[in-house]
Image (cartoon, rainbow, N blue to C red):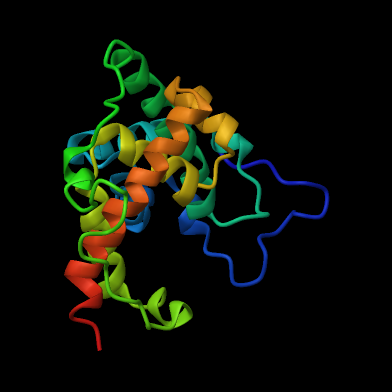
Length: 204
């Protein structure tokens, strides 16, 4: 089954590798990248592996819809992204009976009764543009993100990592805008503390 091409796409673009369109090569060429994408967003190894497998199966069925405007990996990630959103929506329905805890004892322990830091985190002096290029930082970030409580981690990932609009996140997670604001605030505070302890205190 070959991908359909437009009138001006009778031959692949210069430098295009036909092997990337062969489903038999997808696992070797793209599985690791797709797994890294998924594990960051669902934070569950088995779920990430299942979503990658579902992505490959869906891609085989949709091969005719592939165009050459993007790379095969970009196309596969697009399918995976929809699978991940469906996963979060399903998990939210299963957790719908679980109320969002109004208190967070971990965060509360960092502030006094007036809401001020008991011990303020140190200032981050690292150049952000250089920081984002360092693979070591992303490994620490993924570790900190995986330590967030499930629902808080899901909200932060959908809103801040995948850049879904707030209204979309609320719909996927079945929460109110106020719930989302609280969850994002808690995620940022926890991530700041984790990154400060595991990266910035040891960074050059």
